[in-house]
Length: 364
Ligand code: PLP
Image (cartoon, rainbow, N blue to C red; front, side):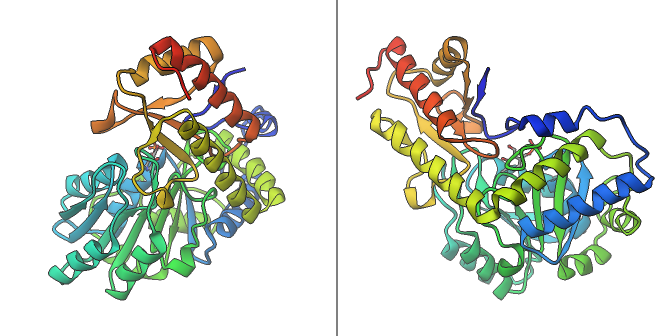
């Protein structure tokens, strides 16, 4: 069997796959309603929030677009804080819908600097909202969201956070940190297939939503909330993904949130130690900010990371992913989130160790 070690979609447990073989049901009926209510309640525990949590049919990017169009009006000043492809994507979406975006950018592998964010907010009092990425999947960097969020909230701004590859895997207490909108996707740490974006909306976010004028129908949070009150979604939902998430969330509850965070920390540490032992370098500059869900690695000099990945896949059935944006063709990345254990990581590291010599590098 393939060892799918990419940062989403992640492999699904057999029970979760089995759940998806169930016949379709009426999405306006009692059975769906009970399931949606249960999924929503369980999501709230993992988001560590009392805020509303909406399940939208779409991928994580859909959730990001939903956050933008529901919070902002054309011309609104927005501060984008980015250290990679996903931070840049958030800014692009806001720009596309007419927001006036100022960007604070950090180089690949470097964490977003809270002092720079503070300075940018002090420089322009008209900024209404701040866009942050908790875990930058393209570089394997986890931002210090607690510190960043405090700066943004102390400045009285709306805080919209891409938590797509962190929520459910890395501690992200939405209420404690004051995240107004937090977004994640079913195919990441949630051990379910792609198809649902889950978004929390704070009271302040609802206020902003009431005044927001960007165009929306499909993503309209008011429609989502009104329907949720009846245990429904405004549009036909991805029912099989809801079946899957309903089961995976129960498995996650059983494992326990703190145990899940600890397992991700352990597997990330094992991955980093494994690649460093082979003499390879991590993309993240300061390991204190290394992600617990994805590890980005520089290949040895002269080794093409995409060819290396091909060998790992063809010979050892281990699937890693490549670089994105400016890092395309330059790095490779391990996913270690969702259903993943030491055996999976060891298998991937062994495949890497065996594949490297074929590309002219003998690991230490
Ligand atoms: N944001 C982050 C941090 C991600 O890792 C991803 C997906 O990899 C996305 C956004 C986009 O999610 P999707 O591919 O589900 O649209």
